[in-house]
Amino acid sequence: MLENCILLSLFAKENLARMSEEQLNRYDRLINEPSNDWDIYYWATEAKPPPAEFDTDVMAMLREFAKNRNREQRLRQPDLEYLFEAPR
Image (spheres, rainbow, N blue to C red):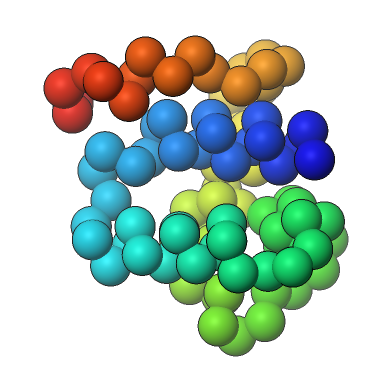
């Protein structure tokens, strides 16, 4: 679904390079295990609480990112060039 694609791809661009291996594993589980994409969206936007197995530090990071406190325009997924850039 488009909302998750935008949210998760922008979150990944901003956070993956500085996440630990354990956090990367938790993020991988989050984006691959739930069978309903709407669940991830509802958890990230705090419309519904996540189940215990997904209520992790990565979910807290995603929730904070979803609040968009800087009011950035988030209208499309980022280009994938960031995957080939050196970590910051």
